[in-house]
Length: 137
Image 1 (cartoon, one colour):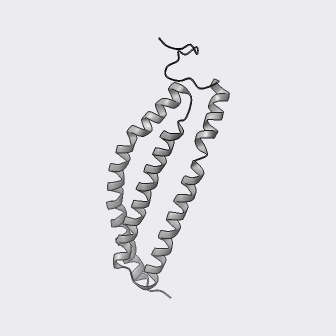
Image 2 (spheres, helix red, strand yellow):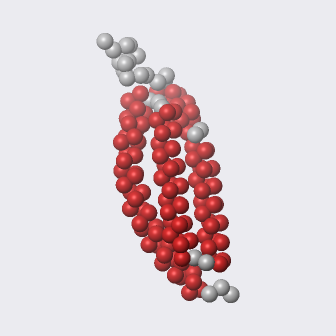
Image 3 (cartoon, rainbow, N blue to C red):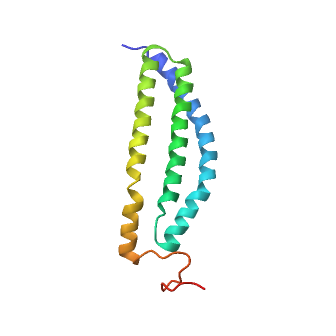
């Protein structure tokens, strides 16, 4: 039976690491809100999802999430030995794999969203068009 004391200490270290990493992530998320707002404005104004804007958001989320996983893992692994270190490393690898899988699947979202928006609102209009489809100017 493993020594539960080692794992409770690991949990405390992990909690501190998560809090520190969350503070950094919160700052990064605040920076990303401008990009997210622009994408949201495009959806409401033009009834379309811009693939490049979406990809930019996904890259930001991917980078931040992988950095968060690495930071927490490094903090926990810094004091972990034996089985705890091995389990932490496996969890870290799995977390990275899950993020990559989910964000990879998210690449389908703009196409699906644009199909649904086109069905609901008609062909997307650009910002250079009037609501009735005529060109501005």
